[in-house]
Length: 393
Ligand code: PLP
Image 1 (cartoon, rainbow, N blue to C red):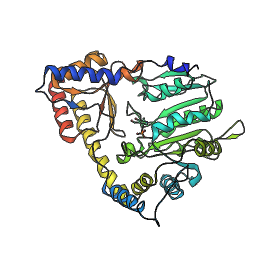
Image 2: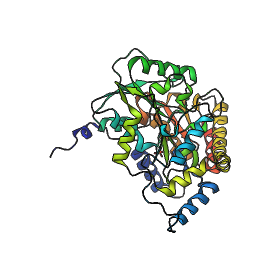
Image 3: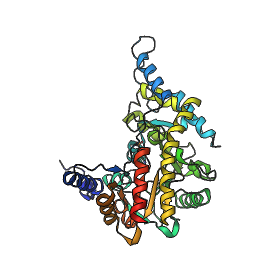
Image 4: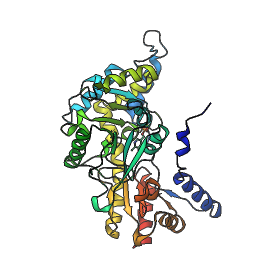
């Protein structure tokens, strides 16, 4: 038996391993010190009351013969699918419930969706990037074309003249840079995809953090996108579902390639490869979209946004260049004094016990940059901002 040899092409990811090793070694040498962890991509606030209430009720439903639910429809509870379509409608995006799919989270979908394209495809990934895009494609035997971005374009690359690209990943608001595409810049990619018969996979995991009115929450706010884009979203950061697991994916019925309908193909895929998201979790997810749920999740997001504000004010005072923070839970700074990412990491760890994420770990063009997350506690963020100021002023 020969296993999938594409796995041999995966590069070891040292990013989070190295961070863990370095922080462990530091704490062993300095057991009295407390680290301020500003690198985490996980949320720190609990689920909101509306979701908890719905989850409890759904658990109780499962204890009675009348309300018990067994297998759920593979593509999601029709009521929740409609709720998600209604959520899009608020942004002026018209979708039918059949164009939305309930998922177990964005990570699962980002990998699984590759089934629609078959093997040996050419995939464009804009860097710095969320590491899972590259690895999922390498496992599938796809060829990855890396597109660099940098300060000169605000980490928002524009399409070039490359041809033969089957799939394009776009993440906005971006992890790790926090940069966001406006409609004009996104339209360039939609036009490029249509011209080249490419499919865009639009990762909208951080859409709920957008506060500026002209930044699209969904790629379908851009004309033509229904003909070329799949959107993958998640309740992980929107509503604290990182451990509860639920997300949603949109595949418009207009999305056809070479006479094949990708929405129909995904229905076939899901009905073959999953038995859907659990009844209990879907009930919790539905509560996110209620009036009360929306109000409560926005209160939590406001806490992270205040953390962002605190850090942005500090970097402004220090005259440090950054993207993100405003419409995203990440702030991506240029390391001061032309320091390398890991050099800056070591400095912060050793001098002020602040742990962030070196930009180099998200692709070569991330070297010299550094990611701060705003998902930590208010107290830690304030203290980290104070220490950063004292160290770098
Ligand atoms: N997409 C991006 C850009 C992310 O940063 C993350 C998680 O950090 C995910 C997807 C995964 O989200 P989920 O928890 O829904 O799997």
